[in-house]
Image: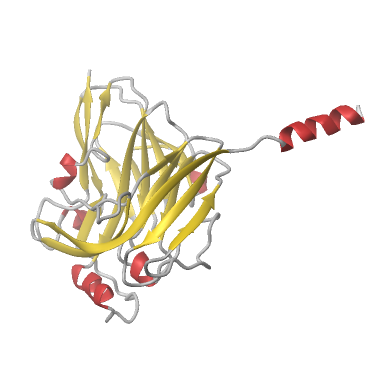
Length: 282
């Protein structure tokens, strides 16, 4: 029996995670949408600025080898909560490799831990598992356009205690531009299983309200007591990462928006900001 136990241990110790490789590039630029001009830093999937932070997909049991290349003018770091902490540096024009081996499926958030990265939206989604389902991605972000300019030019002295955001985005798009974003605009059919990986990269809670349907909390990183709740409204605290599972029981086109009414405006324009849609066919 002892020899059998040792053989089993040797068998498990020989199992290796499948290696996957990805590269992201840190770029700084401005977003122009209607009357919104916002300074941002983005993790781009290509070697040029891209509006939306790169989405990374990996399957269960895989190890991610992530290369980060810094094209910004300041140093950054990489953080994945509970896995990679901020005691690292990705210097200007430097290339650094990181290893991420998650112990569970679900939504994870990766982000820059330095002030100019963290406060200018360098924050993206990693989705582990759920490869056989229809997948969509909502990266919620809020900022004040004047404050973002101060962080971009280095004159900000810290994040204010009385923060008043003026710009609200999903995947760095404001409504109605969110309706042309294939990552966030949910499409499907009645009876489909749809998963939505969602993170809050901003600095205030966002209570997403689903019209037409309830969703199940399939994974959650911070407010873990809400796991497997069925909700039509769910609050994401800053830094949260959640996976919503939606199985539509009726056809129709329904909005999803933050229940905080200031988030459906952008620098005073209405409707705008943190609004997208669910488009479900028969």
